[in-house]
Amino acid sequence: MRAMILAPEGVEVAEVPDPRPGPGEVLVAVHSCGVCGSDVHRVERGEGPYGHILGHEFSGTVRELGSGVTGLRAGQAVAVNPLGGCGSCSACRRDLPFLCRAVPNLGLTAPGAFAELVSVPAAQVFPLPEGVDRELGAQAEPLAVALHAVRLAGAAPGDDALVFGVGPIGLRVILALRAMGAGRIVAVGRSPGRRAAAAAVGADVVLDARETDVAAYAAREGLAFPQVYECSGAAEAVSTCAPTLAPDGTLVLVGLGTEPASLDMRLFVGRNLHLAGSCAFGVGEYRRALDLLCSGAVDVGPLVSERVPLAEAPDAVRRLQRPQHLVGVLVQPWR
Image (cartoon, rainbow, N blue to C red):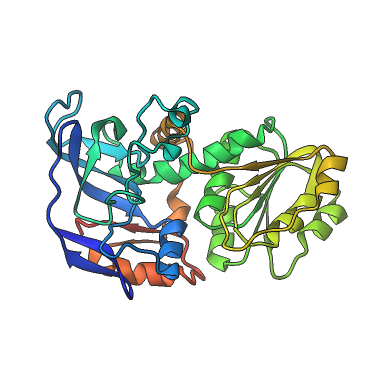
């Protein structure tokens, strides 16, 4: 089969052996796989191993069942949760399957879905309702990341929110906030295309980070946010966002940068502020994301700029390093 693999020059499409489903596994023909920011950053940094297949935001069609698999059938449209877990370790008991050491994570520590076929544990396969576009299943993983962040903030419906960084996850945080009944949402970003997408998915105010001092804006408008989401990963973003918090508010760190950030502990202690790190999601949040998508409660249409065949995926990854008007890309190997 064809797959996009990590290579010394970044990524390339190559012929690799077809996977086979082992006991308890399902062979899935990939329909759509989103290019995550973490995929782009991994390629930028030249992280190996070479030959590894990335891709963890995906959906497809069941092609073949391994021994012992029940409740699924060939030809069934499915979404796949890339995060596996043993279900019994301390991480799994806390619904943090991405920290489980027993089961590899698809596209991260196991072969992913920038490929025509991928073999996945049956427990991580979620059938899509009849009539639902299979493409929607690829949106469940990043939306689940956003739902996890919003849950950690613990804000009440109607509370205002600041979202700093409008990349793929920041945009979905806006979607999740709107679905959860947030009040005024202020979004901050640099990419013109992604700022436009932020407005399209529910942000009430969208600011250009290069032109507006966010703390000064909030003070001028009399805004103090119970919930702030740092989704850019920029080292200076924490000190930029923290002064906009309301007393007892929560700053959720979602973006993962390469440089350490500074933090004014006096501000956090003196105003009883909270700092939370948000990574990945639990199984319940993945199910909730699928429910929101399949019911039409959220519209992810503005988040997809292009749908490309596998042959054009390496170029899409390169272009996403400097997105400009590009918001998101789905790789569809069947094209």
